[in-house]
Image 1: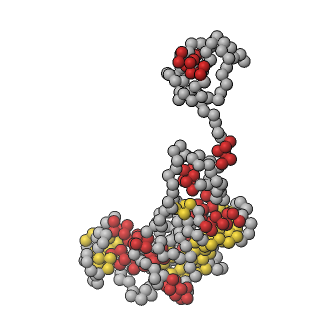
Image 2 (image 1 turned 90 degrees about the vertical axis):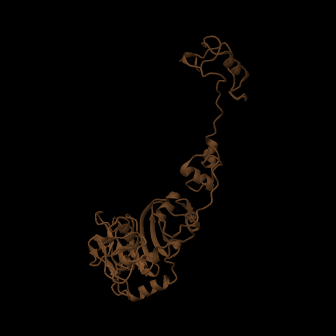
Image 3 (image 1 turned 90 degrees about the horizontal axis):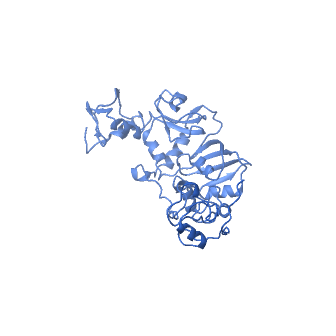
Length: 359
């Protein structure tokens, strides 16, 4: 065991095919990894001859040519969760039932279906998943509402999702309710969030391609080994991929104006700053509402007393006959048609001495 030579412990574990590098870090953080009988920490390096245990499992050295690795394409059904946690019902590991220990490359939402890779090669997982290493993923999406050219244009140019604007992407209408979209990023529930922002409900979402590998006629719930040509294409695509932490830095967020005073908070404020409401209509500045809605909700200013707030039966009654007791200052304000700020109101005064009839 060494701290300045050899290879990092998490890479050694992932190269063995036991788990991904991220999962290896979690095992190390929880004190479940020992090197030569000593509990290891993050940053530990191992050299030839070191004995590495994860729990009670001995981690063997990886083959130099990676001939012992497994690479498969799986047609995930809806309802399967992309996790290696065997305690989760419907986890992808139990669904695939491969004889080797494999884990998914990325994820596909539980309600979604289609193509996903599984492998025992932790190094290739990192190269494919790094945010800075953009790779195409193609989806076929069915929505509940009829598609429009405006929807296609907005999806293609970018939609605010999780505080940032999505990258421009290719979107093609297939039919009245079906479109195809090709992404080069993988934000959490990205397509569903994009559709939700534009007031569209996703009925079905299916991934049909990752890089050059297509789902083809692979049946739902079945898997197959990736071919030599497919693996060659993948290795060529990731040949220049950065496997460092710097490649995983998130994209720069879209600069937004601070919402004006009095604007609604949360999502409404964000939409106001972007100049549209949830349906993409222009909004009136400072309201968070569409211009038509803002015009319909204009209310006249309310009058208020200049002194202490009246209470009891006299509250809200006009001065004069039958009007109850009211403060002189309030009577004076009413007679002058002023509110607390001294500004004139447009409300017409009631003639003094008349009491409204009770119904």
